[in-house]
Image (cartoon, rainbow, N blue to C red; front, side, top):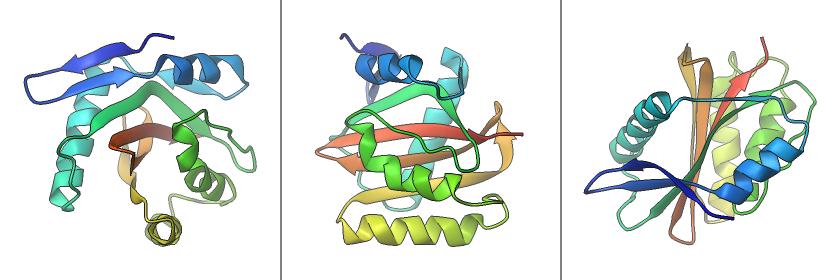
Length: 154
């Protein structure tokens, strides 16, 4: 399936993985779609945060979904390749009663797991929702920067 270009500058090109979108649409995972503008703003924010935290994002291809996965307590989420590397992050979030209240501890716990795997990982739960989005998870795997956004069920 063909990827879709959603962001393209001289420095960075972002494609949405077509199979990832197809997979999300085929399973019962509640989600909503960000507009192209919203997605671009969130991408810029994530790239800025990664640079501020000294992540090396040079020479990586960015893959993401413009669909925001809605996190529901105890409702586990299966992700398609290559995003399945983020499954432990999502599993941890859905197992928590109040992930927003424990965001620092959760982020540290999940990061320890990815450090054990020697995988570059970043997660942030926003202080305030942005475009109804509560956070982001990102990992660098095989020169691909994988980015997914999530929201908590209200």
